[in-house]
Structures are given as C-alpha cells and as structure tokens.
Image (tube, rainbow, N blue to C red; front, side):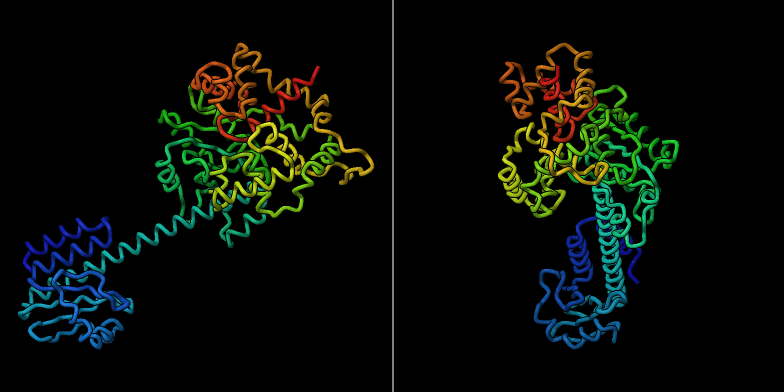
Length: 492
C-alpha cells in the first residue's frame, strides 16, 4: 500500500483539482502520478485516443497494445501487464461504463506493489473527477432546459396561448397554469443575482412552487415573477411575494413593480403594468410600486369604427409572414437588439423585416408618433370583436383623428396628462413635448431646449413618477404619451 504521506498528498491533489477546469485537472493529476512513480503515463479515452499523457510517454507503445486495450475497454479484462522492449507496461480499465477508459503506465523497471496500488488509486480518482464533471454538466443542462421551458411558458402566456403553454410542458404542467388570474412582480436587480434567486426557489420539477420565475430575455437586470392569485386578489404564493418585498427592503439597488391581478390570457397586459410600476418604483423611497393605471385607450374607442380604421391601416401588411408581424409587434415594446434576442434572429434580420413594414405602411418606425399609431392599430385588432362580429362595409373608414376626438378619448387624455399639470411646473411638460418631437432622442432634446442631457433625463424620471408610466425604455408608456398629446392638442 502507498504510505500515509503519499495518500495524504493524493487527497490534497483531489481537493485542488475538483472544481477547476477539467482538462487541467486530469493533466495535473497524471503528471503528479508520473513524478511519484518515475514512470510515463497515458489516459486513453473511450474512443481509444490519448486524452492526456506525460510529456515523454512513447506514442509507439499504444499501437502495439491495441488488442489488449480493446479487451480492457470492452470489459473483457480489468487489468493487464506486458513488456514492450525495455518498458514494463501495465494497463488498467477505469469505471464500469463500457466502453471504458484505460490508464497505461510504462516504466523501465517493474513497479512495486505499492506503486501499482497508487496507480490504481489515481485511476479511481480520475474516474471520480470524470463523474463529477459529468454530474456538473448534467445539472447545468437541466438548469438550462428548465429555464428555457419556463421562458417558453411565459412567452406563450404573453401571446394569450394558455392551451399551448400547457401542451409544451408535456404533462408536467406548472400549478400556475391552473390558476384563473395572476399578478406579475417585476424585480430589478443585478444580473448576477438572478440565477441565485431562481435557484433558491426552484423545486424538483423546475418550477417555483405555484409561481414561476423567469430571467427577462431582453433586460439583463430584470427578473420576471408570475404569481397566481386567489379570488380576493391576494397572492396564492404569498411567501414568494413577501420574499421579493423583503429583498427590495434589504438591498438598495433592488426595485419591484407589481401589476394588477389579470386573467392568465392577459399576461401581456400584466407585464406592461409591471414595467410601468417598476419605472415608478425606481423613483420612490421604498422602491416598490403597485400598478394603478387607467384602462388602455384602445378599449375606450368606439368598437366598430375603431376596428374598421385598424383593419384598413394594417391592410398592407395583412399577408406578411408571421415572423414579420411578430418582429413588428415586439419592436414596439423592446429595442431591436432585444427583439433579436427574443426571437433568436440577427439584428440585421429584424431591421430587414421592419424596413418592409415601413415601406408597406408608409411609416417611419423611428418616429414615436408612427410607432404609437401602429401600436394603437395592433391593440385594437387584438381586442374581442365588437357586437355583430363584423364591420359595416358600406360606411366610409373613419380617420384616426376622428376616433381620437371622441369624448371617451378626450377624457382619457386629460386624465393621463393631469398629473403633469398638478405635480410640476411647465418645464417637465415642455421637455416631454420636445422629447417626442426629437424622436425620443435625449441628446437632440437637450440641444433643442438648450439644457443638459442630464436635465432631460431627470425630467423624464419625474414624468415617469407622475404619470406612473415607463418612458426611458421603448414601449406603451411612450405610445400613450404621444396619443395624449395628440388628443389634447385637438380637444377644446
């Protein structure tokens, strides 16, 4: 048997190697064994190739051992010894999974029993390191697969496809999908913290109890938490909701936006609400905000007339490929780089699809007013059909200005803009108008107003807090602001 000192050194080598790069682990261990035995050593992998070896291991030895190596690898032999010229060679198969790797030890003198025992110990250690590496790889692949499945479920819910969300789970349906309503908690935190938070609450099924936690695929500092609601509007998974609030309380760089309870097919609406609430939370002392907003403008417009306008507006892209329509819709809520990440396409592909849409509709999708008009048309066509399930063809198609001149639209716009009138002087209002005119470019806005870019951003942050809308990132908040200004400018 090897001496206790050698075994202690072997254990120390194991502690040093575990957790480091796998190739370096094996190479360092083989080199250490070669020094201990005064021998040349090679580790032959399951395919019969040298995986690692000491520097002076003679490559011509292995072809002469081909028959023996085949028997060892296939499990017919456990160990074999032979002499190749001046070299005494011992081969030992490692592990039980066929085909097996083989440890080859060659030395000019026969190895003592203690040396052979040490080689066997190192061989066993190599197999332990290999299994650790395989277990880590399997665990990582499982975590990645679970994360992809959670994201797929979330994306299906974002499109209102509850049945598709259930089918893609292949029978392992998360409890969230059995709820009638949910509430989204959108946590802003350092990107590096998201994985730790997800792993801490993940159960054996890859979900999070009755909730679901998803890394935002667009914003690296956002963690999306979907929690089911009971009939009284309280979270069924109250423990996770309380945990998120406690996180924000204890970490100054965290913030939390919380949506109103919505039916599961309205997950996209809850996500928009949570984004708005998070924008408000970032400017409040407690860094937590619930969504308290007006109903969306699209649902307040006269149904049949609004649908007639929206269909006529979108007619040039009605026959466009589904990918084009998906890219167009997502680009109204996320930056183009985020759309590319969401759909796993290149930014050039996103730009090409949006160019085709712009040409077909005659719009400039860099202009926030064009984006807002397109977003309104898409929102109207997503609504349930008005009574009658058809639009009267004989009537002329109304204009968007006529729709936005209705009493409901004017009331909505005044209510939307009222916090700006009550909460600040006119400077924030003026900055917002100049920001829209400048295509939401803060640098151009600063130049047009003769103020600093920092001041422009400060005014936008103030507006987010007053309007309870997200403005610093592309999305519905900017669209609503554009519509509110447009309506207010035409209203008495």
